Image 1 (cartoon, helix red, strand yellow):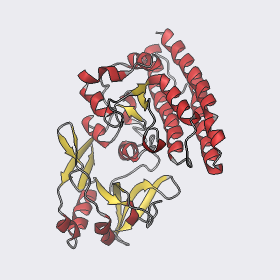
Image 2 (tube, one colour):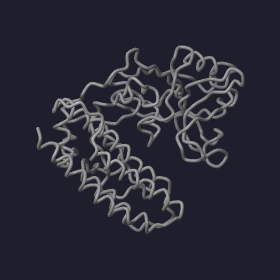
Image 3 (spheres, rainbow, N blue to C red):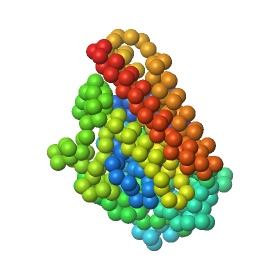
Image 4 (tube, rainbow, N blue to C red):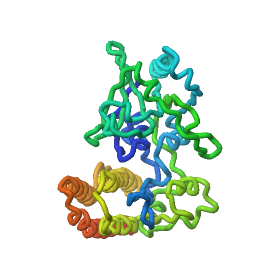
Length: 350
């Protein structure tokens, strides 16, 4: 059976946690080393008061496949085949037996251990990475009812009941989501992803100058595809260090109704972004200054501040203290200043 890391580098969203959990190992802790460090936040209030955010380019399973770190095989299955005795089980066990993973689109209403179980219907992919032959249960990764990324199990005979046909969606000519079951295989020799189109110094300069990449979207299919995630028409998103302003505005606004777990996702995403940037910055110092370093003390302070902000958001949300959440905008302004000063001084040395 394949291995899966239940503590991946990035786990804000499942579309990032799944590929990280598949490819990361002690030898290659972060194959996304060469992924761009840009991130994006919208300039307008989103549906249900949620703030959309993501890395650019995206770091989901499909992006990993394009970088050669994963291979994907779609299996078409009809509803009759899914419910036929042993048919679905045979296919999934075959995938696991070949060292692969099974990505199934399921209804969390039927998955014990999730917050939605027996409460509301919520369709979403579920990554199955193991099978317990003694209990005949599938083992997969999801967000548990405690809100943590972790392991959940499901008896194999109950999976057909949980199965749902995923919505069809096109992604660069490939009909994404049209198949009920997807087999994922890890590349035989997983290494670091190839740098996309700019070196890290150009990336950092673009990040520091908050280049609004939305201006390039007419001539950049990758960016155009990325911006479709944002519901505004035309897509309006801010990139780079000025994204802190969009996040601060989100926390300072008086929204009606109770805050949700999404606030924690935003603050955790900032923390994960700092971890990813640290990997890139350490590499820049190693290659650009010929210094053997494994960490950057000043950046460690920035990373610790983002983690403190995340913990403060958790505590405020549990107390339903909207004032404390809104005060995070001041901490974000401090974080933006610290980060801009550090990156600026680092670039001055090249």
